[in-house]
View 1: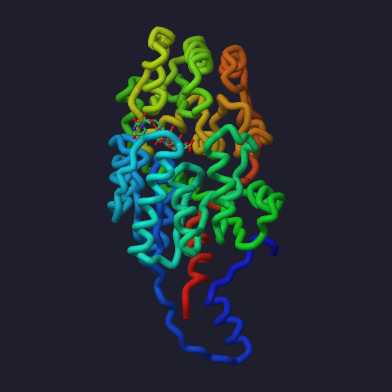
View 2: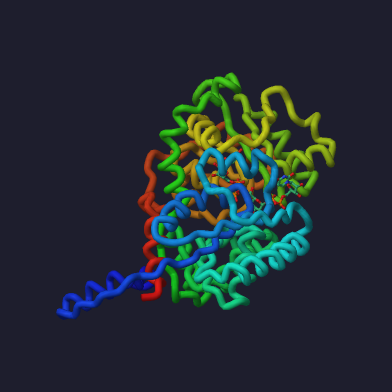
Length: 384
Ligand code: UD1
Ligand code: UDP
């Protein structure tokens, strides 16, 4: 069973019992430092933290990469994530400065806490800094969402993914493609295909989302609007691409609800693109996860360059138009529920009009119990 090897002491105990050997031992709790810092990481850690806190001590570290209320604290409040034990207040900055400051501050925390394990999520600068700080101190690193690849090294996230996987001793792969990507890089030890923790979060919260009043607040009707998000560096830090995307949104026949990421807000202003935004496009502040799930579920189509949103669109069966040339969630494209259009104005307008997925979908993202599987793998590292 390559890539799905369980090292749980309870399994060892069972094996020994089958030989008539009785052992008495008490498993020691582990101290696990979880490092998060950006919006999707709060969502990803929420189901996993709940699981690991059942039997272990978790120390939660927030790097401070995201700090606006609606990019950070809102998620802790609505998902019931415990208050971080440390907030490193690193804030925004160029790649090297931001990652470097995180590295210095995370190292300090790890030297003080001396954990058995460090858990990192996804592909942000907070992920890489956490993995690097831990591995240099010979602390085991678990990477949740390991093995994802866009094969586009111009993305800071791709560098973060590759290096974090290298630095990790336990790799929690969400999909079979992720397992194969790791195999192709010679990484086969410590790889566990667990499914996707974002699916766990979605299943848990999608019924809660039925209580959301966001459609009434924005005065929109189910299936009568498009939902849009953009924040990828290649789309925001490039005046031509950002301009083409905003022009395309203005050509969509329906209303476009556009919760604007602060990075995008900043560049719309910097490039003076406000006049590209026509009346059918409603710019709103980023919304909480519960409201966002409800907006996704009721959207006619989704326009996005987000990783997590491509997947959520697939899981909620909403056609997704991805404003990128590539994706690490390739299964959604292969199943024809997601189409890659880059920042090409005509392609975006065309897909908004005519992109129609088939009925059929496959199950790529697990069974919604990835967090439980991750916790069980971690249990296997407990000392007897
Ligand atoms: C980061 C991640 C990206 C992830 C995204 C999730 C990296 C390299 N990028 O991108 O992988 O998909 O988070 O949303 O780690 N800003 C604010 N307030 C905030 C946060 C950011 O105003 O609370 C503004 C700042 O001007 C900042 C800019 O947004 O410079 C970009 O923030 P940053 O965290 O560097 O990258 P993201 O684009 O958010
Ligand atoms: N999301 C949210 N409010 C918003 C936009 C997104 O709660 O206004 C959620 C969305 O449901 C998904 C996650 O944020 O779970 C995706 O994060 P983001 O797009 O910032 O990052 P990426 O997934 O691209 O790394």
